[in-house]
Image 1 (tube, rainbow, N blue to C red):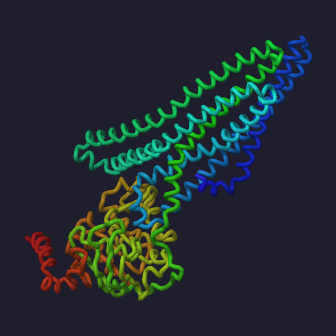
Image 2: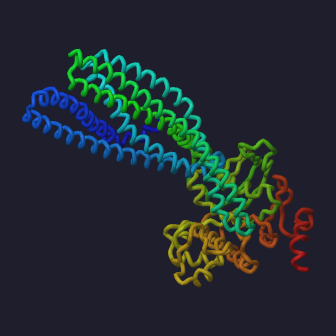
Length: 574
């Protein structure tokens, strides 16, 4: 947790002011019992109304000053904690944005969401509690002990015995509670996973009539969270009865012993009343410290999870000598490329790939599911780095090119079309924030999206639901293609990005793309019809290049390609 306090540095002034105001409140509360004792011993004992009134005014003033201190502490503590949490949340989000696919593979999406929300909220709350309670309680305990010792040191020995016993009990409870709270946060991750999957795939759930099964899955995750939370908080609740027994037992013994001292004229009634007030303040402060320490025990699990994200090293970063302005033609060369996923223990996904893609060429990539087609193209923009070998663009290893520059010059259209909340125009301008209406129209015409967009009442200003839920799959794919075209990249990658598009529209898209001169185009497809007119077709099988050539050449030389062709094209012709 201490590691995260570097984010408090900009708010040091507020963090210092909060305890200072709390000192004012504590001083006031320690002062009031002393005045009350004087009222009892001097005012009430002597029936001196003027003295009682005068001291009453002093008590009111002390209470007002204490209230100002408490309000000031609450204000500055809350403000510094909220800004502190907001900065950590922003930093965690920034780190996640910088993660490579390898980094993201280490964390579940639901877990990252929990860390960004619940975990950081817990941290904010504990900081507020620390700046208020953890300052107030020790001050009250120290001040109360000093005042109690000054009144009667012998009675204070009884108090010390009670305090030592309470500290021993709390130590045991802290040791037991920490692992339980870590399991609570993990259970929250699991319930978020179920929720996210169910909401994202609600159409599939309904189509397969899986509502009851999903309810059962959610119920299991929900019950698991409930049981571990009950177990964790049951540990904490054990503290309260123990604390109250010690508190009441200590106070009862002190009242009994103090009564003897009053009867023997060792203490006055006012002193005993004052002493009991300080004892109550001390023991209540100890209870507050124990509650705070319990909260810290829970937050430790949260801070560990936050630090895990913040301390994860970026897997893919710019090299010290990374270059810009080196992509001029878009020629790509794979030289003896082998790739394995970091956490994989099986065979490499790609093995000894040698491939040259000339500038301006259109390359088709074909292969069975899991052959490594997507992995191959992911190496070009460094979504992953090669295990061995190299990928170069215009003679420069992609690991020697600045990431931002590299990815700005590469346009990728994924099979899963992803749009964001906002208008159609907002989504398209992801490709080029400064794109003109004419450029947007031209990109949409090439992508086969202009006609259906123009058919909407608000055209390009049509609001999209989250993920573009008010569009069909084919419409979303065409908008994603248009968005990528607006980047005007030197290299275009289509990862089976027309799978939801009808044959006629796909043909128009291919014709539009053919007009883009000087752009290297890589098309991954499941259908031969999507790539049969490419300059070169690469057949991937088992992570290796099984064959390459034009459509006509592969029909003659590649059994795999011929089999796919006969399966797809001949059936369509029949």
